[in-house]
Image (cartoon, rainbow, N blue to C red):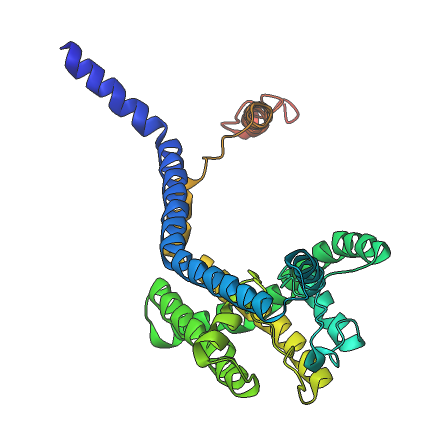
Length: 335
């Protein structure tokens, strides 16, 4: 008897806090996914890092042996200064001296990466004034960009998602959730083709050292706003039409980000995903003040209804009782 009561109480406890248990499982799943990613990245990339370190040590040792007049300390200081400058996008190589990082088109590209929170990191402000302006510019510009993207996506969704779904739903007579799933799949396929596959082929043709995989990797890292900065187009030496190329990349990033948001919003409006999200959300409880207002309004409405009913009943009854006449002689005026 006690065991059955205890089991029933446990079942009631779990059912009453079902969303909490789902949320805890979601958090645990996210942590496990982070750990899984760390294990895979470490196992895949660590051997390549170790190999690169060994190659650099071999090259450095060979260089010092061929140049006896140069000490290791002076070489270390020189390499440190060169690497620090490279972190700010400045290279000391002769073939890279023609590319400026802060001409107008490069600055426009940098501003777009800042406002879209992509942030490749290949170029950074050098001066204190530039760093201070970057902070102020980002504080104002990032919310402004979110407002701009939200307004644009909201208008595009009407023509790209809602109206087509209603058109095919009324025209074909298929269930609306099925039409929404097919439409989202077609829209995602078109987005991947127009903003991943085709641009990857174009970048692999324009960039000398990029293959198709590296170009596709750049497109995904950019449009997902990850922005690692290991691949940045237009930074090659003797790049033809570099200014126009940078402007085109800026337009591509803005349009691609809008399309990605439209696709994500389309998938978020699917009925199946809405039901899945509700599992992890807290149920909205009505506040006590709202309940009190509703109860007060209900009582007031009940009181008014009762008064109106009584008034109607009283109105149906005559105010003065008039005796019914059987014959004309019964009328006192005639008498």
